Image (tube, rainbow, N blue to C red):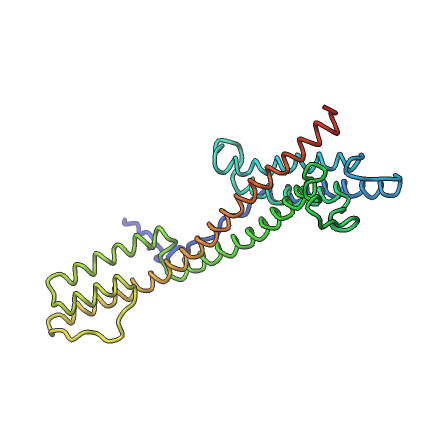
Length: 288
């Protein structure tokens, strides 16, 4: 007695070009809301109960310490991503921490400054950037850094969606898969054009170098028409993949350029914040 097995399905498995969402994003969002919410309530209570509040007086001074610690914690994301790969947790989980605690840090830093640089005592002189151990400069640098990060996050989402959408359309994939497939097509065209007429070979060479097919086909002997049709079909696919490759590479260049700017800005902002935080800690808190 024979046993028949059902034929396997030939339907292609759809490709998924989307990274799974980080499971900890809601945790870090909730923690950031709790941190800022409790700090804001404390700030409002101090405004109604204290005669004078300022960055050098508690609780606003304590808010500065909290913001300083949050900045150090968010900076650990770069350490995890580039150097300490053995640290626990996935990179996308650390990214969620970096985003939400970074936003909480700048909001708490504004409470620490009592919004003075923008509301109460706006100053336009150069000394405003050097007073209070570069306090205003540190706050502005932190704000610019967070705004740059938010812009970069939106840019990163745009670039990822653009690449994923293009990968779904070309039916090949992302840059590495495109380059591999294009190399296979080049070998196919070279094999078809070997030993053919000069017009055949020039047509193929121009199409491979430019990524664009000439509008008019060359005049060829009848014996070469069948191979030319195959070569033209291959070159058409090659041209389409060339456009797809350029679009994906452009999106990656944009994101890579933003990351370079963000890293430089982060280093400068961290240096200023460290100087301000340590100076305030040693001089006004520890009285050293």
